Image (cartoon, rainbow, N blue to C red; front, side, top):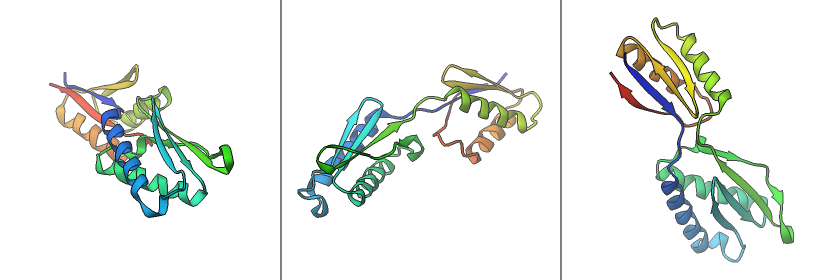
Length: 162
């Protein structure tokens, strides 16, 4: 019986490279000179520091540009509310979403059931969802339907077995 797994992962090496490139660009760009704007990578999150709101938005744009160039989905970014930091600067945390939460797994299971494909079932297994089916074509239809559906997280389809 053919199966495949649905996961949601972020390549941390690519994120690290994108953050390094963004830091380099911020340190050399004229509009960021002597502003104290920084990008810092922490485990599971990225911290942005900027003196003003417009500089913070520009910092976000630089970061997103570098992540897209490195094929990291922007759906993996969860922007938190910008908060006041020391000396009147702004700080914003950007959490990296990896793994499929139980709520998202329920949404995926419901979407698979709503397709009404005979012999296709899905079940949550930790931070991934396994989909079983009698025919390979049905599983490919599930993949196509889930790619169309916007769940707010990046989905990868792997471990396809016949």
